[in-house]
Length: 224
Length: 186
Image 1: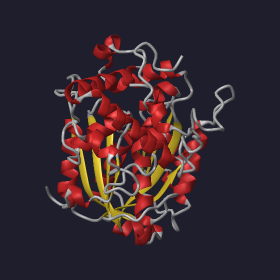
Image 2 (image 1 turned 90 degrees about the horizontal axis):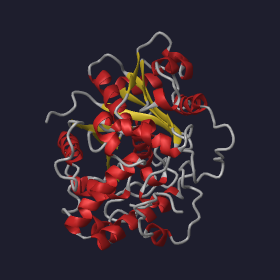
Image 3 (image 1 turned 60 degrees about the horizontal axis):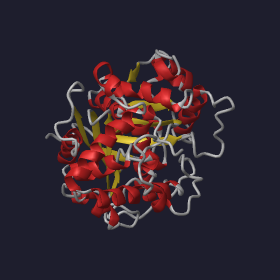
């Protein structure tokens, strides 16, 4: 494997609050924060870290904005959030939940090929615009929808990975694996509690491990 | 799986810049607040085919090994990980795919505290997809932002890393579209 042909850097990172169930400010009965606000906030956060706005190119990543928001042609939002990108190359990237990684890789290719010296990369998604069971159907597009969807569960991807978990339980034993999964959950929430922008930052559950050990109910993903 | 094994529905956005050395200068960014990307591994698997082994993430393993090889480091030199833990089981499978735990032993690896903030391999210090959230199109960018912040001391909760390298794994679908990146202090 060859080394990268020139030095590539990442800088000026910014995250908005990741909002949804678990955040105190999330109230699905009220209008959601518009997606344009999220895009503008993160672009402002990144651009504020640049002394000069010497941006050559923009890449925007989103998995299913076409269905969640009925919004396509996402490259057009790049000059909206980064005025420096007017009349410069802007591209949208999609690779399901791996969209962000591929957007970064695409930016690296552009820099490595000497087409650009500075590429602005943004990723976003708005999933709370629909109820979760409908959102699950939209997210099922990350699989081979026309062949897999009708055999899948209502909450499609939890079903896909539950099957992986089931195979793992069969191969290596369920009790220890379930404890490892519960410990992972506990660690994830404890780490999120130290990050004010995390969705689980305000999680106050005392016994995280015990909660995560709740026996799965094959009939109901959500506790009844 | 139960509800707590799943990352939640989420809204959010993340951004950053990717730049050459000249690009950093043009933007007036000091290298001390940047990180160098030294390894990129990408791998794709046929979306129409079911996984050959449901207890393994083979595409993730391939992408990560390419990124580490290009970076010229071993997995033991990684100071912190950002894994794509859309579900808790995915974290276990990813730890095995990357070779940190043998097949069937990832649960024990986690229970022993190895992935905790002060373990030998601090992992998902951000909270990961389960803790920070998973607005799908934002997640991969968010992972790199958090690795960058951890390596440059800008994270909300920065820890002292044993090695100055970070590895992230961004996964799309059922281990189909995978990108791995290795970064180090600028």
